[in-house]
Amino acid sequence: MVEEVAFFFPSVRALLGYCHAGPRQPPVGHHPNRIQDWYDQFAEQRSQRANGPIIYGTKNKGDRTAALVEEAVSAGFRHIASASSHYTNYNEAGVGAGWTAAAMTPGGPSRKEMFLQTMFLSPSNPDWKPADAATKSMGVEDQVRASLEKSLRDLRTDYVDCFLYHNLKNKLDPLENVLRAWRIMESYVDAGTVRSLGITNVHDALYFDQFYESVRIKPAVVQVRFHSNRQFGMPMRWKFRELGIVEQLFWILTGNGHAILHPATKAAAAECSLTPQQFIYGFILAMGAGKIHPLIGTTNRKHMEEDLEVAKYFDDAWPERKLFVDRWFGRVALKEFAGKVFRRPDLIAHLEDDKKKKDHPAS
Image 1 (tube, rainbow, N blue to C red):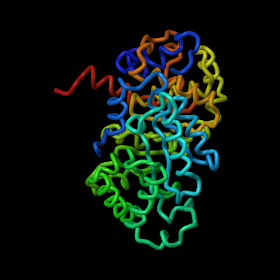
Image 2 (image 1 turned 90 degrees about the vertical axis):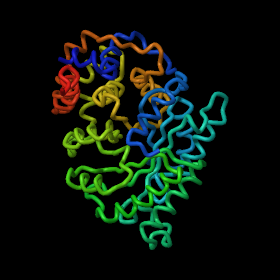
Image 3 (image 1 turned 180 degrees about the vertical axis):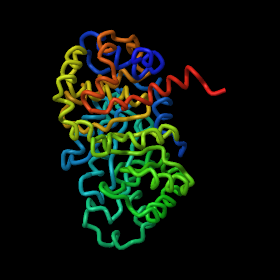
Image 4 (image 1 turned 30 degrees about the vertical axis):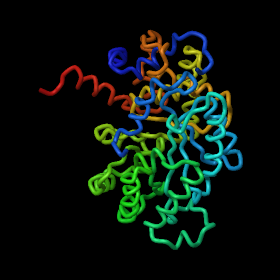
């Protein structure tokens, strides 16, 4: 079954084909599919240094943010995820300094080749930085305006590619407050200052349905945690796929240390001449079939390059991408691997369902 699925989904073929790829080489507006459109639009323009559908996350980088973002962009990352300077764990001015420094180097990317996203954080969130009492006392509409305007200055850009509403981690912000903020976010899309919108930490189907039906400009992105305490996102994944929404997954390695250490991961990674971390990222990309983008927050240049190396097998812009099915991994099977390592064989069920739809289209 896995081999059959692989022939219909390039992202699965890419992971399966990776195992026989030989020695690793150096890494070479408001439309719901805006992020996927960006990857497609610039596929022919990206060099081998700008690889694949992975995102460099800038949380908890502190005073090292500028240097690390410059390093990440120089290594090949083009999608950078940030957040408002009101968020205690982000240094957005450092993000702006970092990507622009990389852009000024020979062969550095232009603004059009970058995908910059930021987040609005409500003062009700415990991660709010208690440094600006005036902003905290504003209504939510003015808070959104102040957040985005400062993000534009800090990121050194006149537009952002995606603007997310950052929900609470353990409970959801009141829907009324989210909708008030979203209307202002929509106005920036109308003005061309924001290209797409998204929301984080949505894990309640009824809440999401009410939100989705209430907004004029639909979310292009939902950013969620990949962890067992959220069932790895499975209860909501079908809905997001049906609506054409891209998932951005975080906590892939941090929250799944057991997966990295699992004998099945080590065996598969060794067979493919990968590190266990690389193999897990490859599995996530294969599982997503183009609709899941991992957030990667490494501070190590070698690891950046290793992650980009995996991602290039999911990037149509890379002309030497291997698309043949690896027989060894075919015997292991994605479903079996998901069951052993994550105890969720249904993590790839949507791939089989898509194949059935392709084989038997509705009349």
